[in-house]
Image (tube, rainbow, N blue to C red):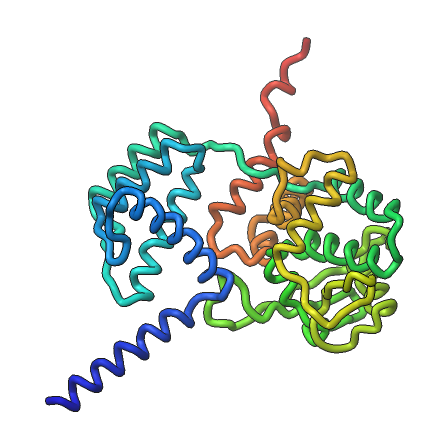
Length: 318
C-alpha cells in the first residue's frame, strides 16, 4: 500500500511536469504575468489566490471590466488563472455559472467591438523601410532591421517566432525561401511548420533578397538569425529578444512620423493578414501563413479589410 501511495505521488509530480512542459515558454510567461495581476488583486482585498474559487475570480473579472481593459484581455486573464491552477495541481471551475454569467453581462455592457492596435499595412511598411534607409547607422544594422521588418510582415510571424529563427531553419530554393518554424503558440506539440516566401519583383521590398543581403554582410552561417549589436556596434552571437523587436518596430514608426502608440509588436503580423485579405487572398491561405488554428481572428481581419469593398455608400450618387 505504501508503494502504491509513493507511486501515485510520483505520478502526480510527473503529471505536473508534463502540464508545465505542454506550453511554449512565452505562453507560460504570459500566463504567469496575468496571474500576477490576479494575485495583486487578491492581496489588496484579502483573498486567497491559490487555490482560489469562482466567486473571487468573478469579482476580479468585474474589477477588470470597470477599467479600460478589453473583453479579449479579460477572457485571456480567466484562461491564465485556470491554467496556473492546473499547473500547480489545483482545480478551478472556470465554467462555473457565477463566472460564465458575469462574463456574459460584461460582454453586453462593454460590447465586443473594441479598438485594438492598428495593423502595419503596405503604406506604413514602405515608410518604415524608407526611415531605416535614411538613418545614419551602419549598413549592416540597416539590413538586419529591414530583414526583421520584411520577414515579420511577409511571413505573418509572431515576435517570438522571429527571434527564435536559426540559420538552419532557412532553405533557399529557386522560387524563394522556405522557413521552418520549429514551434509556435498554436503548435504546442512542437510538430513544426514551413512558411514559403516567394521572391518579389521589386527587390527593394523583397524579404528573401534583403535577408540574403543580411546573411552576406553579417557572415552568419549557423545559429541565431537575428542578433544584437554591442555598444561598440559589433555584431554579437546573442539572440535578440521579442521585446527588442517590439521596441525596434515602435522606434521606426516614430522616426517615420507615425504615432507608435497606435501600434504594437503584433502589428506586422496583423498587417500581413489584413493586407492579404485586401488583396483577395482566401481565408485558408492566410491561415496557412499565420498559423491561426481558429478562423475567428482571420475573419476579423478579412471583415476589416473589406469595409470599403462593396460598400453600400458607393452605390449612392451625389
